[in-house]
Structure formats: structure tokens, C-alpha cells
Amino acid sequence: MGGFARRMSYWKAFAKKYPSVPFLRVDGGSIFVNGVAEAPVLNRWTLEGTYRCGLDALNLSAWDLPVWQEMADLTAAGQIPKEFLDVPLVSANVTAKLPNFPRLQRYVIKEHSIASGNRVRIGVTGLLYDPQERISRSEFEIRDPQAAVRQVMEEIRDKTDYRVVLTDMDIGKAMSLAIVVPGIDLLLVAHNYEVASEPQQVGDTLVVIPVNEGRMFSEVRMNFGPAAGRAQLVTRFVPLDRTVPDDPEMGELVRKAQAEMEDLRKGKSLH
Figure 1: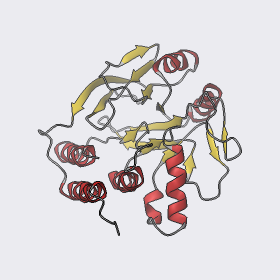
Figure 2 (figure 1 turned 180 degrees about the horizontal axis):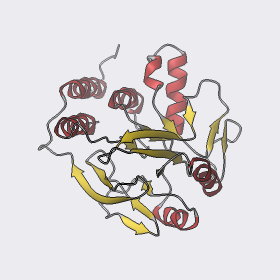
Figure 3 (figure 1 turned 60 degrees about the vertical axis):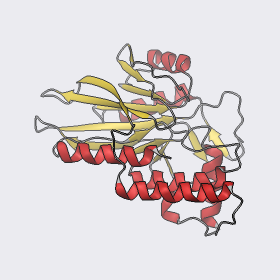
Figure 4 (figure 1 turned 180 degrees about the vertical axis):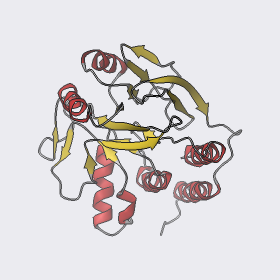
């Protein structure tokens, strides 16, 4: 969870230094943990931290889906504040059949002013990749990713100037997607890759692979000309090391989470 406090600190510093420069906060998903004893406690804190980060879009990944379902059940039981589920989950190819699953949007469109005085409209959608069909089709409708994102790209083509897709598919499938589906300007591939990889240009699509575990994040700066249609892109990794101080409020949340985790490991009862 340590990345929350430093990520928020960087975002606030950027906004203070460049008050007239708009920016989007997007996340490719796979934010929760599974298969460890501390997961229920850690995931609750992760949910709160994600909510407080104020993301513009968060992809629903196959890894996260069972935890979102669990968080929804806990919210329905009154164990988690309802507002924590009010995050911008996006998915072009998933529809939940469960009544209390967090709200899913096929896409979001954000509109901002740019230096030329024009407005730029950025559309963001997500894709869940489940080739082995581990997710229950009786509880979720999961459409073919390629067909689903092609439909969304066509739907938002005239509503947007720039289009972003977030996905948890592997890099090979992502490259193929960039080749066969027109209209994707930026494809963010969050597939649990631990080693930093340079962005790759595939046709008209820039493919970005962020590093996992919150150790750093990928920054893509878009320099638009007089028209909002195309942008010059500058990409870089921003390490979230000790040179980036903790945001005070988010740092306090992280400290509370760490203290509760430590009590859990020591066998203390939690209230």
C-alpha cells in the first residue's frame, strides 16, 4: 500500500507546479491481493486508499473481480462504507448480473482545456481478459475483448479526440489488439510485469506497460497542437522512492493499515 501516499503526493505537487495543465489518473487494475491470510484486511484498506485517490478510471481485471464481489457483499452487510465502492470502474466487455456489484461503466469521457484554448476530449475504457473462463458466466456476461473494444471505439470516435484502453491481457494479445482495432491511441497493459519495459509504438497506438506493486508509475505527457486531434507524447517512469514524500492524509491511512496488519500477524484480535 505504500505507493498510495507517494503517488498522491506527486499528483498534488504536479497540480501545484502546473495549475493550468490538466491530467488524468488511470489505473490498469489488479490492485487487490489474493491467497494470503492478510488479504481481507489489506484489501479493505486498499479499497479505501483507491477511493481516496480520486481516480478518473480504473480497469476491472480478472484478478480483482472476486474481491470487488466480496467488497460489495461486505458493503451490503454494512461492514464497509458504501461510498468506498463509488470508484470509476470501466469495462468494455463485462456486465455484472449480480444486483450489488459495484457500478461498471463501458467508458468514461473527460474533457479538458488545453494551451491553445481548445478543448480535448479523452475517452477511457477497460478490457478484462479471461481466456480460461474462470469467472462465472452465470454471474457475469463477458464478451470477446476484441469485439467489445472495437464497438466502444466506434461508439466514442466522434465524441472523443483521444482514446485510452486499460487491460490486464498479456503483452502479445495487447499488441495484436493494437494492430487489428483502429482508434486506440494509448493502450495500458497491466499484467503483473515486474521489470520496467519501455513503451512501444504499434501503428497509431502507444503501448505502455506499468511496473506493478506501486514502486513507480508511468507518466504520459500529451502535447497538443492547435488542433486537439493528435498529440506529441513524452513518456517516463516516475519512481515512488524516498525522494517522493508521503502525502500526509494518505500517509496516515497507510500507517493505520500497517498497524492493523502488524496486529494481525501478532495474533491480536481486530475490532
